Amino acid sequence: MWLEYALDKDNNPVSIKDVKRGRTNLRCPYCGRELIVKKGQIKKHHFSHVNEICNAISRKALVGLPLYDSFDLGLSPKYLEFLNEAWEQGKYQKYPNNPRIPLFLPVDVEPLEEIGVFRWNDWRRMSEFTKLGKIVVGGLSLNLFNQEQELRLKSRLEFLEEQIIKSKSESASEDLSYAITDYRLYREQYRKILRASLYFFEIKADNGISHKIGVTFGDIEQSISEIKLDLNQHFDTVSIKGLGFWSNRGNIEYYFQHRYQAFNYSLGNNASYFKFDDVKPVLRDLRRMKPKQLCEREREILEDKALDKVLLSLYIRHGMQKSEAHIGRPLAQRESTEKFLAKPKNQVVIAVLKKGLSLRQTASEAGVSVNTVRKVKAALEQNRDP
Ligand SMILES: [Zn+2]
Image 1 (spheres, helix red, strand yellow):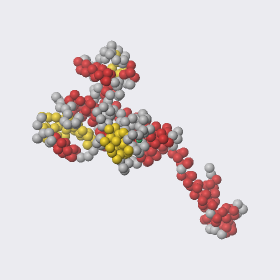
Image 2: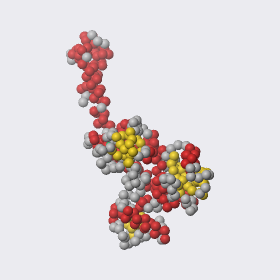
Image 3: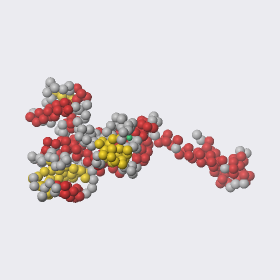
Image 4: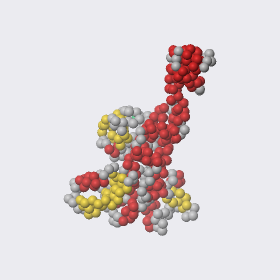
C-alpha cells in the first residue's frame, strides 16, 4: 500500500497532500519510524521509510476512500481507452447514456463484467455500462455518483471494523494494531470529506469568464479572498461570484474534475479551473445533488470522538463487552475483596463467623462493630461466586 498519512509529534495524522517533498519529522502511523515525502511524476505521492522495511506497508490494505481521487479501478490503459471510446461513441447514438457496445471487442469483455463495469442486458442483447462503469468514464451524474460512492464509503468502514473484530477475537496482536491504524487513517480521511463544503465559483478576469470547483473547511469569504490573491498574480482584474455551496460534500471535488476534465484549463498546477462552452448543464448537474444526510456513524466521525471510545463502542456492538467485563473490572474487584478479607481484624471475624453465631454475638466476640461483621459476610459471599 502507499502510505498517504503520517503522524506529527502530537500524534495527529498529516496528509501527503499537505507536505512538501523531502525529509520530514513525521513518523509512520504503524511502526513509528522516520519518513520522507516522495512526490514524483510516476508513482502516487506517498510517504516512504528511510532505508527500512515496514511490515505494515508491505501488506495490501484498503485505507483509501473508495472512488475519491482515482476512478480507473486499476484498469490497464488498454481497457480505459476502450471504455472511453465506447462512451464517446454513445454521443452519436440513440441512447447516449447507454451506448451500444460493439459485439466484437478489441478486448476481452469478461473481466469488465467481473469487476462490475459492464453488465449484460438481455433485452437489448448487449453489454452495457453499469453506474460504476459510467464513473470510470466520468459519465455518471454528480447526484448518482454521490449515492454510489456513499454505499462504498460505508461498506469499507464496516469492512475495516470487521478486520479489527476478527484480529481481536483471534488475539492476533500485530494484526490488531495494524487493523486499528488502518481504521484510524480511514476515519481521518472520511472526516475530512465530511468537514469540507464544496463550492462552485464564477470568475471574471481579463481572459473572460471561467469557473472554479473547490472545497473549504471554514469561511467562504476567506476562500474567495485567497483565490483572488492567487489570481491577481495572473490577471489585473478579478471578480468572483459564488454559484453554489454544499455542506459535507468534500467527496465530490475530484470526481467533478474527472467528469469535466475536457473543460479543464490549467492555471499554474491547479486542476480546479474550467472554461465551459455552456455552464448551464453543469449547474443543473450540481444542483440536482441532494443535500448530504449524515447517518449516525458519519455524525460520530464528524464529532471526532477519541479512538479508544470509538473502539469500545465497536466492541460492545459486536458483543465483546462481556468477555471484556469478565477479565476486566470484576478481577480488580475480586482482588480488593481478597485484600479486605486478609486484614487481621477481619480474619478474626471470619473465624468467629464459622461458629454460626448471630451478627450481634459475632461482633461482640470479635470486638468489632456489627457493621464490620456485615461487610465481612458480604465480602465472603461475593468471593464465593465464580
Ligand atoms: Zn512503518
